[in-house]
Amino acid sequence: MEPGKDGRRVLKKPERQARILGIDEFLLHEGHQYATVIIDMDTGVILWIAKGKKKEVVYGFIEHVGLEWMSKVEAVSCDMNSDFIDAFQERCPHIKAVYDRFHIVKNFNDKVANEVRKDMIKELTAEGKEDEAARLKHAKYLLMSSRETMRQKDQEAGKIIGKGSELFNIPPSTRNGNREERYDELIRSNELLFMIDWCKEALRDAYEAPDAEDMRRQIENIISKCESTGNRRFLWFARLLGGHLDGIATFADYKVTNSKLEGINQRTKTLRRNSYGLPDDEYFFLKLIDSSHKGIRHEAPHRI
Image 1: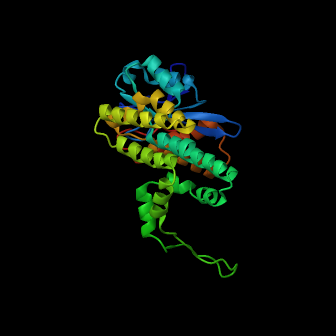
Image 2: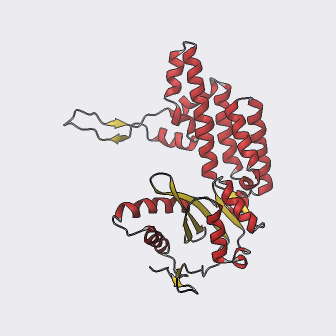
Image 3: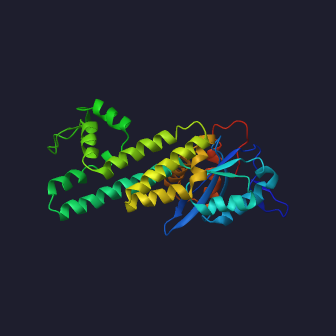
């Protein structure tokens, strides 16, 4: 904190020039009351916190740091909240969006893989194919897993993951095996399930592309394949990718994710849990800003 021109306290402007920003919202209070945090993606330092999750938060931050400082910012990492990116690009048209990889993959898992699975369960149940429906009911996390995860868990087959209890007659639980084998059998049984597998692998390959042009080409191929299925879940994903193509492909140039922002979200929950009786939101925000400076030596921490 530092005194403003009118004597009111204001946040100190960043001493370090950021190249890439990250922005995300978090739940501040029950009842859909949110706050938005903006960080320096290289250091994880919180640069700005404000109530709300609309464009006004971004406008306030840009006014705080100034257009000259913003002119050296190259990109903003975020989820696909168009309000945030629209606000940055309205005031600073040079800034590029980098849509977070985690949100793309999560959207595919939740809105495509899982919804296709549920659609198929309904169809199989209606056709009286109870055994096939039951097999799919237990395949949710199998369909969402990567092959690397399946192979790792197969290697741990038989490992005790729950010690059980003699007192309550609960036997120890062990890691099941044959995950990859069961998965291969599953995706061979249906074209849409095979397509889920293809898309997962294609997305992984796209995120390893050497440059944005190559990544764009690979994402366009995924869009085309999704459209070719005619399935409403895949068509939805094709529209999602197509509508955010520039910001998705930009990942190849910057290789940033929102992991630091997710870490701040966890820190927010921990601080709230361990800080009963905080006097107000301002104090809470300042505690968060101060905690984000821990371990950062090149910039003095904000003080309450």
